[in-house]
Image (tube, rainbow, N blue to C red; front, side, top):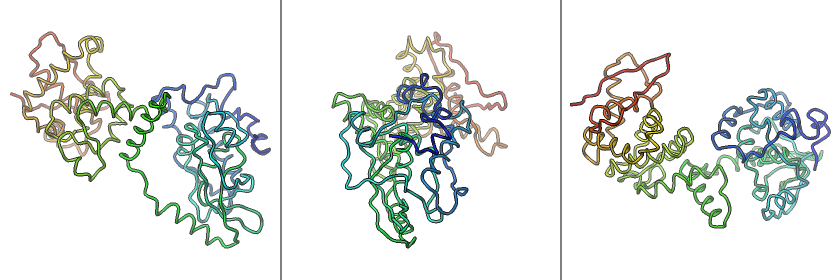
Length: 403
């Protein structure tokens, strides 16, 4: 269990410049999901290794990752103040984290790992931080693939990111099956086989896997991973409303209350919170049950609810949502008209503002249209509906075709 001498000389034996004072560090999973995403959004997606030469050592690539994060400054470094433990090995990490360890056919020392910069992609830094370091599962670190040359260098052609992720924890060995050759042709062929043929997961795949993972942990009496909780929340709300989540292109997605844009709903839930999104999902599913689920309607409703008096909303939730639904149904009485709500609002602003080439701040635009509809058709005078405020640098206004 150790960082290399070069790493400790530059950053100390506990990565102080990267992580900050040890006494002030907290576990990543102690942060709220929104705070986690806020931190991750500041992390660079990609780091080039061009300055490391034709053959880059993993030690130097690890140092490059640390430097990139430190150079962001403490306020923008996603790992500052985060507790990253050190482990002797992947097996020890698994035991310490209460996972059954993965049994490897062979382990290799990371100290001999290199990358052929002429054939390999460089570093997807956010992927390392978000998917490996901040969501570390040592029992899931699968073997990579490589080539050992006559100088004893192990060219890693698959498994680079998971290896660098392990290095943050001081782990010195990972599983890398390799062939022995001085021919760099095999670097290209191994990289090609591992990165072109595999099918990348869709947004629906990610959603489905996260839901299943959360339910499996709940059934085992364990807390779901933070990154899976949003999907599990959405799954339960969709189930309650009769919304069917499908892959894009699945015929089921074109049926009543079919949903193919689950990626949008995950983003909206993070942005607006579970309370507003639950209300928004129930609104669209139950107001227009004969239409495919329209994510834009849910987006606009969440923005509209966010603008209302929050005490009134919390204390009179059912009455308020009922009044909103009744008003919308006067404007669009048919159950199959769900696609017309957001579409008619956006068309109105385009028709009345012909100079617009694109609509900025779309959720506020949809919410503005909902405000006009609800304030016109609401029959309960006890409600004072709040208008939608736009940023000061631009103001949209338009009229709806209301009777």
